[in-house]
Amino acid sequence: MWSLRLCNRGSRDLLLRITTASHRASTTDAAQVDEISGQDSTEVKPFSQIPGPKGLYNIPFLGTAFHFKPFTKYVPDDLLNVLSDARDKYGDIVKMRMGKDYIVYVYHPDYAKTVFQFPFKEHLRVGMDLSETFHDRSGVPRDLGTLQGDAWAALRKPSQEKMLRPAVVANYVPLIERVTNDFVEELRKKGSVDDLLKELMNYTTESVAMLCFNRRLGYLESNSDTEIVNLITKFFIDFQTSITMPFKTYKLFRTKLYKRFEKTYLDIYRIGKKEISAQRKMLEKLQKEGDLDQYLQDEPNFIYSLLNDTRMTDEKINSVIMSLFIAGIDSTANTIAFVLINLALNPEKQDRLYQEIKETMGDENTLTKEHLAEMSYLKACVKESQRLVFPLMLGAIRYLEEDIVLAGYHIPKNTLVHPNMNSMTLDERFYPRPTEYIPERWIRDTNDDIAKGQDFPFGMMPFGFGPRGCIGQRFAETEMYIGVAKVIQNFKIALPPGVTGVKTKLKTFTTPAESVCLHLTDRNISNV
Ligand code: HEM
Image (tube, rainbow, N blue to C red):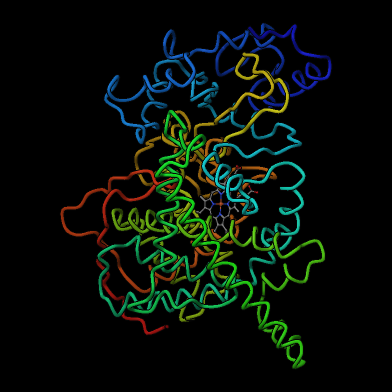
């Protein structure tokens, strides 16, 4: 049984600091009343009293299994439904047994804010059991997503300097634009698309390869090799299965799932190593011939900046590139797919976006960073799609490093807390008319109830938050904005007649449950 009395002095100081900070935005007398729960926050309740399923549901491992078939109608892939049912039943904070441990789920942006703004030191990544088992067994060095503590910080810092600064990513606009032009040309040749996600996976593979390997892979050409796309798809399907399994048998045995995952990872690793070594040789040759300076002046070169960084060893560079390559393909392809689907389903929003593109670009064909800076409706269209179809199953989940008070309950150190964005983003308390696609809710200076969500930034964080947030956020946003803008600039898009929605499923990232066919009507501009 946990109680305040168990905290040491250091923890208690922290605990009070956090309580005050978390309610600064929403209460007049922060230390007294939690406005969300209506509880007196001076009366901190013990962890054991956090609402949640009772009785057998609390048995380690087995308790989790009781939430699924044959005990309920749900299969493990329906975990999000189990979690939203829990919110409806128990409120904005819920404690549930997940495997061995409890996870505390929170469903209010103010509670999410408290969690994300915790002064983490270790920045532990959680939920990566399958990857961690693989790295431990195989001896393949861990990547950014699985490293912890100092080893993670040593890799993250140099990579972040080269990836997250807006000015650095802005340099990639012309490169991404060129890839996008080729993508648009391929679409024009095809006239319509039978499997939207497949096309977009080729597009994001090609874009991320520009970042990671500084070369085009040729994935947009007809009859292209789709090895990487197939590997990344398998990677995330198996990863998804591993997250929702109540019993993580792969940790004990080399199960079928484990062996498949191991093979997939090693295949991706082999491709990455080959590309990096080719890039190194090419740069060495240019240097020998005295052409390197000119080559580097022409275009940004992420891999060169890593190879040239004295803090980075070959092993570290491989690890960074692996993380970016694996994390950067499926994520962005699925998100762009849903933006296009939502625009196809909402022709009046699509028209408004087209008007913005026309007004901003006029007769110009080349999309620049200055154009992007002016297109607020484009950004709103992307953001609204991420709200309506939240891109990830888990999103950011945190392992508390000290005791805190959350929603009036004492949460001890080492507890896993999950701000459940999948539920929050569809909650009408924060986002009125939550099931509708309304990009206008993200336009600044909208004095309407529809824009209420702007007051709850912590209710919608598709890229996570803080030092452990998504390192690829700026690259992904740039790619999504350019991809969507260029498709809409060139085509009027529609789903087949009679299609009024697209079902989703989880494959780590949220993905269309079936192939999506997209009709393209050329807007008759010969700009690429
Ligand atoms: C729409 C696309 C994307 C979404 C929704 C997304 C989302 C996320 C989220 C939620 C996290 C965890 C953040 C946290 O715990 O606070 C993350 C981590 C990460 N993302 Fe992304 N991401 C996207 C695109 C990308 C791209 C394009 C790249 C690389 C080019 C990338 C690379 C990574 C890496 C390496 C991590 C781990 C960072 C670390 O642990 O230090 N992501 N992403």
